[in-house]
Length: 435
Image 1: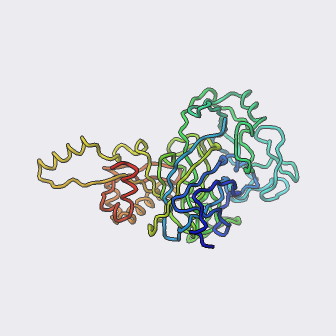
Image 2: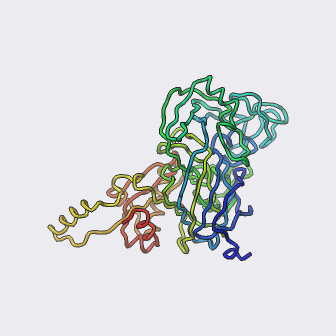
Image 3: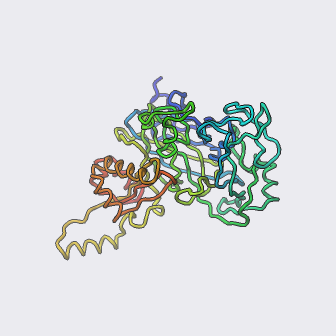
């Protein structure tokens, strides 16, 4: 196939995975470098978690082949649109149900009664026992909600409010009408559980993508395509077990970083030919850390523009957030601040002031300390610095932000133009921040 000749300017994705990213899976496309990818995404987390036939923890879009992308390149993903389509969702802090899984409740679910693995299921009624094994009828989901809520959104999708028992159960009886998921989705809706521990709580919506990235070079569950969840695959007792060396083939597409929203730019590594860009796990909102383990997972419309960046060999994602999402110390200096700095430099004979721009490097690991070390090392390698220099710059010109507890962080700071230029990123930084 002459991929460059046959590639299209735009592609609408109408297919989802069962939660497993596999470099051997045929990709959709190809789409041109500079092309547009659109999709109606399904909710992540809770729906797939209570659907035993789903093996990856989420239900993301089928990966898309980007023409010209080769291993060792990067793909620049400009997020043009993220729009919530769900009218309601449910979520909460989870509790494991022992005996309902083999080693990992996200990827190796089993029926506690007939022991069938990844069993097909039926729905009977509503509530935490509604999803049952099709073969034997036993309640089969490996997760319960320890403390949860059902939330309705306003028409503008600007605010949501949590509801009481009666309304939560009314919504649970018509989950499809409120979840508004894509027709190809196979998950059960978490609305079936009708949780209602929070009532009358108001929240602001600010949608972001929990999953956005490229296909890893080894088969793995999509929810484990990161250093924290991925660590559970090393030596695991199920079919998706990996070695430590194989885990290095991940691409960290499961970030759960709230800055991954419309207007941001994500630069993702290419570890398989064609990149395999995928998306999903839309959050209506999320506080840093996603400390409850889950947030408001919703269906929604996403539009991306993808460009191949040749020769940028990175191990994990780099983000250019919106200006308002940058830590205060990492924001570009204003004209007034520059004038004051120049006056100070002139007074003391310091010389020319360093020019710099914001950059956010994602780090992941089994815990936050290891994720931070990973991000610092990635930033140092990308920009040709020592780790010690990155530590200093992130302290005086940036911040370490938690994407997801227990092990996803952002190393965000102002990087010198000369280093950004050497990395091939100066043009993108200037485009994003108008500097």
